[in-house]
Amino acid sequence: MNSQFIMTLIGKDKPGIVESIAEIIANHGGNWEESKMCRLGGEFAGILRFSIPTSSKQKFLEAIPKIEAHGLSIMIKDSSQKTQQQNQKSAKLEIIGTDRPGIIQHISHVLAVNNVNFEELESECISAPMSGNTIFKASANISIPKDSDINTLKNELEKLAEDLLVDINLTINC
Image (cartoon, rainbow, N blue to C red; front, side, top):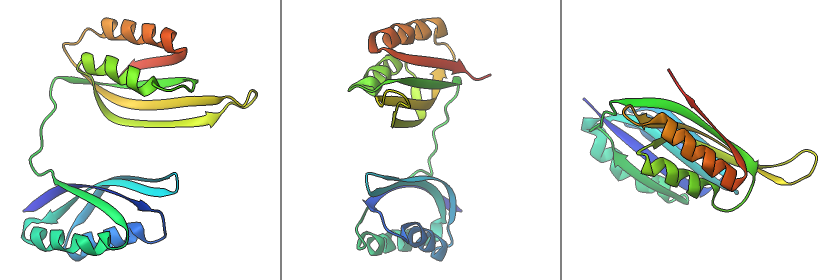
């Protein structure tokens, strides 16, 4: 039987970080299943899901300080007990507009009060081609309760888009 884990890690970016994590997982008979990793502001940041045979779990956890000794901050959560999300609709949310403080805070508030959950969120600031202004772009996969009033959510997001002077596009997946 396998134990499932989620690991987050952050530290100064340098070659070999991914290899050191992959090696310790493999050395304990584990399987790397899913990950998102990137360089942000000169730092390496990552999150991954993997499994380890339950019989190797303790020895694996005891080996983590060896990786942390190389300057990584690591957090591991046992995710063997999975919670099922039922009665959810998936949707895509796209935001673009002139950057300003608070865009994500305002949008996440509207989503939270409507019981909408972020499944994935990516954002970036880019320079507009002609004006050089900073443009904020975000893309999110979200889960909406099936019994939610989609029109109310859309109306709230449209009003917010007007207030923030951004474009917000919500697409419900079938």
